[in-house]
Image (cartoon, rainbow, N blue to C red; front, side):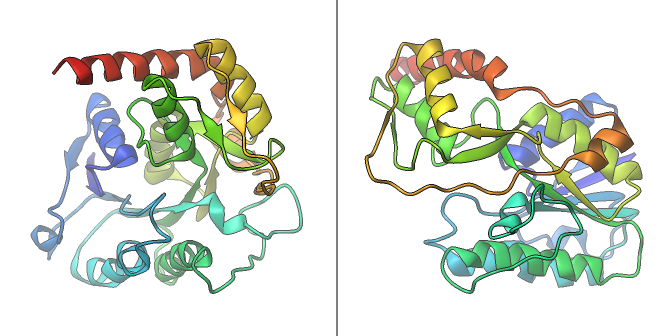
Length: 276
């Protein structure tokens, strides 16, 4: 099978390309402006272009990445299927739990909301296409080796690797859903090739509190993770993963089981960087 990965040099995109090649698929990564895709047969497309931690300071870039390129690509290319990578952030403000794919969503037009608004606009552009092979994957917090230090978990691992005391600036009761990069790649391949639904939550379905994360990081690294006093509680609703478990037999890895390896990798990478 041929896959085209827009954003194939990013954290998720590059790992996805490696995974697909290992499975025997042909993988094409377009240029940044995607002019090399016009009129081309792209096979199964996965749109992994996006911003993560710096979207608040780069609102125009966020809109361009999540929305503006899409219409041109959809109109100028040929493809067998199209999978748009969105985010479980779109469930922010949802009153009911767990967060299911068909839940009505609420967004706020401000600096924080621009990420959710742009992702939902990208989703709407894709789902407005008649083809039943247009699909959306809403990703939770993806963890893995070499993740950006600007991400929440990445910043804590970077602090540990550099001998700094990790500091969390949110309440210990705050929580996130973490899914491993390996699980994400495994799921995206299957959703792209044969997903029966149009929207999928790609998550572990488990909320890990900052307090639990700090405890396990402390055990695995001998570092004391501290919290800024008086900070706010921030959590998304628990994510429902019924679709991916029932359709694909998915069983998520647990972050707590892999933190030791993540810490060790960060320390090793830092040691190599400092000797260059």
